[in-house]
Length: 423
Ligand SMILES: [Zn+2]
Image 1 (cartoon, protein in one colour):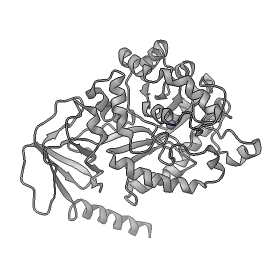
Image 2: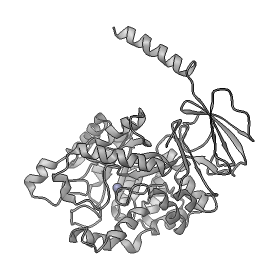
Image 3: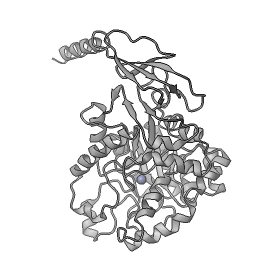
Image 4: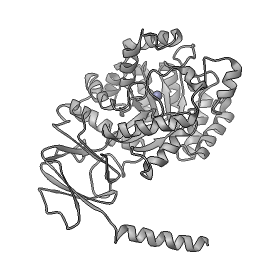
């Protein structure tokens, strides 16, 4: 029975690549194949099923039966990557909703936000923490095309200390027990266990909350939470399973300890000073600044949306937002694009580009942060981030030139993800 099934699957695969291959021809006036290279003039890109198969200068004739997309004088470029989104949530939600809404509701919210994110030009996102296993259901839905959305690299629930940013906080102890997601840990041994549990559940990446965070009800500031042996255990265990670790971190001490332990990327990195960034540089740690998160928070401050505990922490951060980006660039720490969408409205992800430029990146560096640099952090550099034969057909088109004005990336006119055109 099993053998027959395999034969049928092999036959189908063969038919898929030969008899039923779908060809799409895209004409564009300007093409940025790689954020590190000059743009090309009018070009023809051929897509076979979900792969880019050729890119040639000029306008070549389309083969019979091919779907033709004429983008006129628009600029075609690689699909964008946002390394830090929370698809299953919308901004300003009352934290007490956790006691009312079932996790399944997060999948519905996430399906809505996945489509919005894709239409904003983001063909790959890293889901940076969501209720239990909702992100894995979304990942499966966008992979098989049941729902419209980007490729999702999913963390699932974040590892946290008890009472930390990734734990449930702000309720009675007995309510905490009911809402516990099973991913807090104490000591190197238990932290290793939780990494393996996340891996078994389906995590593509391990998310941890290495320091206090702004929008949770934990009231002990923004410095380091895990001990160095715990961080070391998390990094080593994840790496032994072929997984990277992304650490939410604000305070300099917590960032330094995370980088020293070999954590792969620091998310937010708000108070990273030169000494901290030098450790990141030495260890090859990426900075994912999420400047848009603070825009979202700023817009909601003082309106009775956040609790006093949260408002206190917001006020600690706002004067320092963006400084780490400028320092990181000066010290050669790679800056990769992430926004924290969900803290602000999904779909505004592209507004991060202007903030990165405001804090010192060139437009070319900002575009690289969301394409080639992000792809490298995901270990997907041979799959996404460039337009080249053999790469996944993830491309977008905008009016104007993003290498001179990044704000053109805030309004994306056309999107193809894994060979499928978003409508
Ligand atoms: Zn986040």
